[in-house]
Image (cartoon, rainbow, N blue to C red; front, side, top):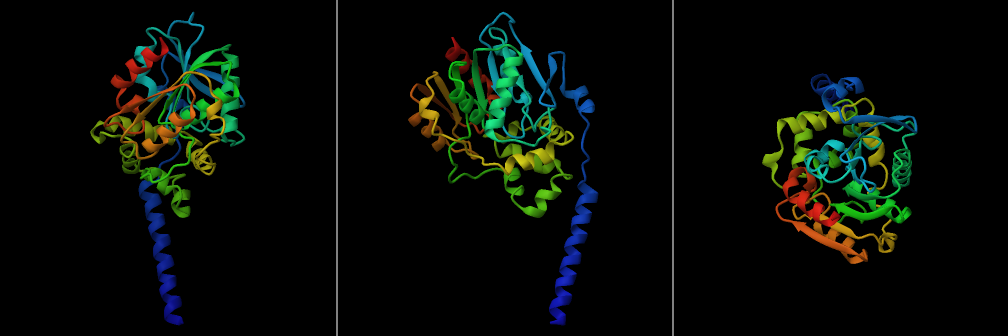
Length: 313
């Protein structure tokens, strides 16, 4: 018994020492919003006071366009994920995008409420303040779940819907990403509030890209910086404690013409889920992108841009 107790004590002490070493070596403090603005806000960036947050958004393109294209990003991303596409679409369309609560420069919601219904309500209030009554709505991953939920809740406001590797249906037989695996480990989960190694960020991005060679040092730095925005790491963990699937019972009720874009190398939300949307949506077009992963608009904007442009015409 004494030997067992001694062994357990040594093991516990070793574990505590290891954790302390990891923290000392990899500790990454929060980054202030003001510091991040210097790098990631530009002349198109605006900030809206909404629900106790300063929501970072960009409203670009022809201001007379009465039916703008609204873009929603996914988990742990930001409005920057649409940069390449926006540069082209703003030639013909008014394009609005924002950092959703818990992410980007917007940061955490004061009430830490990250349910899908709350995101839908947030989006409705956001568009009302911009006096947008009709729009084309596009969303990737979590943004896709919010987009179709919004189209179901406000059918008269969404003229066309674009779902890009959208969340919603339960996920089966998916490889997933490193980040989503780590947050399920209790001890590691707590460490991730103060430790954000660039190597983990890189691997997490590579997990959602079809062509991993496209994951640059600059892209890794951008994602890491946004993750370390003050409050974002804790907000992400709270968000991931919410259900990752959504209410799909309303999908068959969506009458808006819908384009489904999906990378065939999406190992986070597999292609089988695209066929579920295709099965249930009454007015849809499915396009499968070969050799592309979970974020086609970021990985292969050259393919996504003309497909969406034609769909909006």
